[in-house]
Image (cartoon, rainbow, N blue to C red; front, side):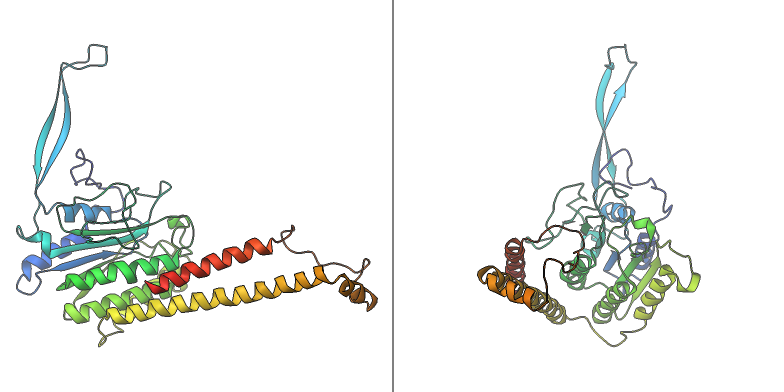
Length: 355
């Protein structure tokens, strides 16, 4: 559901789920095991926005809905006899009035270009300062409620690095700082590169699911006494059965759930990994620049020394009659512009590494 539409009231299914398993499980745990489970974190890596979970989480805060009402018959002029608004109160607590501080929800999904369900723009209702994932527009969850984090990844195109950055730099630190007593995962595998349901958005591999699961297990080890629950959501590429993209993704996820048993999450390790990836990217750009500079130097040498071409022709290395290799795509390369672009990318990578 879309909690921002009053007429829906947070109670209508969009078709994929009739009952929100994640919210039901979290509310049940907070009630039945309330001596141990006082705070919960719900995370969702399905390619589609967890709008139903967001609606359930938003509803724990008392809210007044305002709905336009038209009363009386239409006289043909397009106007009604009476027109007004009806206010209704919406409050669906899981435990009590302290739910606002006890619940955190985070979802990373495809967004934009009418990608289903159309919600999930990048936003963080509890952000204290701007970061690499600021609010960029779109429907927002209720701000006066539990902390809700959305990272909407635009497409369609593969965005594995951005997806990992969203989890490592945004979502995982938020979950760790929440210090939940229980972590619940909406484990959807339809963001896989070979799953047609994602329409080309995100494009993950099995190793990506394994990585994020291991990090969530580490947080559970540190704050939740290892308590973590995974609930199967999307994943539709089942052709191939046990070797299908879906089966391999689930296997990687389950393997990680029982893997990092004694490890605890560390923000310092995440920073080290981020810095290492930045260094690798900088080194890649440096090598590209060196190769480009070499090509530019060779071309300049040929332009400055026409005799070199004549010597090459006399030596039979090349000449008018020599067959020339055709470059794919045709056309000429603007090496100066390419060099400028690489220098700009290198400077951007350098500045990111210094932040």
